[in-house]
Length: 133
Length: 133
DNA sequence: TCTTGATGTGTGTATATACCCGGATCTATC
DNA sequence: GATAGATCCGGGTATATACACACATCAAGA
Image 1 (tube, rainbow over the protein chains, first blue to last red):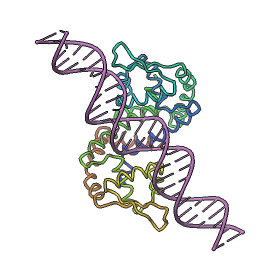
Image 2 (cartoon, each protein chain N blue to C red):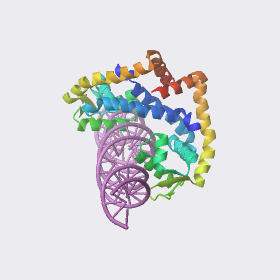
Image 3 (tube, each protein chain N blue to C red):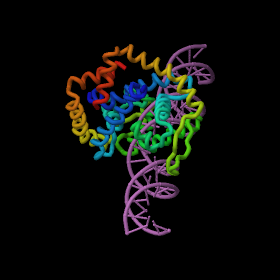
Image 4 (spheres, rainbow over the protein chains, first blue to last red):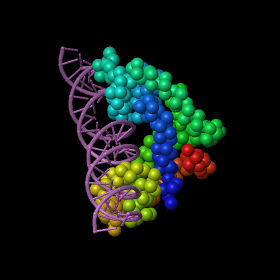
């Protein structure tokens, strides 16, 4: 019984499902929604340190560090050093900008699909509820 | 902009947050919410094969297999063979039943907290919305 | 300047998750 | 009864995520 009403489990299922929608749409570009979103955050803050970025996206620093490394290997992001030699400074690489441009309409498509399915009212409700958790 | 309205990213954030609520509550028992929930599902279906369990919890078979292995190492679950020699059959071990009993009130606590914070109305709304995704 | 404490990373470890592939077993068909 | 196709699992590989610990660097004070 309880498994069907567990807020956590239901959230996880929904997250896996919705993630796959975005992942499928972005697949032609070779990135998943987590990477695409991280890329967008980096663009908005670049040049940005791992710590600042991690704070922004509300993920552990080490997690962001490892995710960033994947983006670096894909040549979507450049990881350099700031004046403070401790800082790893992230900037978007040319290929990364390309992905951002090509990915925008794909992301829009999924976003629109979801809102169309739920309706604007419910989509808004959902976001409000998630923020209250 | 878009990162703040991406259904997927917001879902992920909410999921991580809510997971931590349950994880903290269950921490004294040494299990997390994913393990506890899996345990509950196994109890409900035991003896159950990996494939059937995976189908039930909507996770990949290999994922469930690996998660089950962790539970086996913790001695919460026993993994044996059915008549069909291919099947890995899961059953709850004595320690597992203990965890299930002790965990129930802890799980209830978190569940109640969340519903108290949101209110029954919104809690219900949330679950309905998640199901529509 | 030297020491100390704070800050920023990277790595080790562990779980969660998915996809793919290979090996074992079962089943149906001939 | 033997073979072909279906089914089940395990392991390899890759990303995502967190926590703890060690190392490097910086900044402030003696």
